[in-house]
Length: 401
Ligand code: SF4
Ligand code: SF4
Image (tube, rainbow, N blue to C red; front, top):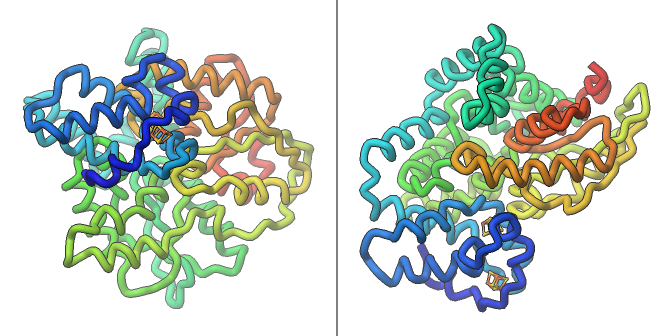
């Protein structure tokens, strides 16, 4: 937590209407300005936070829409991650918190995550997820968001003379294997030689958002080592991971042994849409496509035009815009599981805006948004497909299958 970051807020309130939680909950304490006030109070005292303070800070999506709106350059994502670290340090969360921490850390244990995704897949195939959905309540909501595993997990690739390294991630690698393979194909069509270091792990974004700063820094050091020995760019196909990997320099800035390496690593990171060149792939039938701005691409990395340019270049595609395109869909890492009511309200607004644009396909660069939007569309009776940008560029006709 840097006091100089907190001092950048001049309390002008220009961010309020761009904050999704303020729009849903209508309380100053659930706005960026209100939260910064609470965080200032938190760092000026030393005791345990009040329940009210904790609830308002935990209700933030860390979507960073306030960073886009703010004329004063408030680094809100960094502030909120620091504040949550302070919360974790001062709380005595007991058994519940330690179980939550273990559950969250599943993403950083490849074997545990592989078992979890396979079990979820099995539950889907034998109809258990459908049954859970029929039960209603929180279990039904969680079941609606479970990913369907895209074929086998994605394995490391060791290519001599590689020009690009792929950051494969954790959930992406286990549950979105086809998207990973499509990412490699799309890069290779562009003339890249792609390697995928096997010794990489979860980027740590979920840990950082949850205030598990020490674990997030540990995972960052592990990844920096995994990608050492080359200066090639590191391509990532998940918005949340990309924004976090680009912030490794800040994350390890106070660690003299790692600060320089972390900065150099971060400078190599690129989102897929920043490196792929627009090319004339072709859809065999006309397609109306909505591009869904993931918060950590639009607000976190300022990437808005590149994915749209890639989609426009595909023959047969009509790109259609939706109302309020940069408003969070409510996914936000594990937020949709911890705050289902707010997440559902945001999901409904997003789905309504999408349906009004009458798309055949919704393309996104973030797996969490894809699951959240697909579940919302299904609930609303829409048959529009949700696809990752890599899969769409690799084979636009997959939208018809
Ligand atoms: S990060 Fe998003 S939810 Fe949190 S205060 Fe900023 S705009 Fe609101
Ligand atoms: S975060 Fe930025 S926009 Fe919001 S009140 Fe502070 S200075 Fe103003």
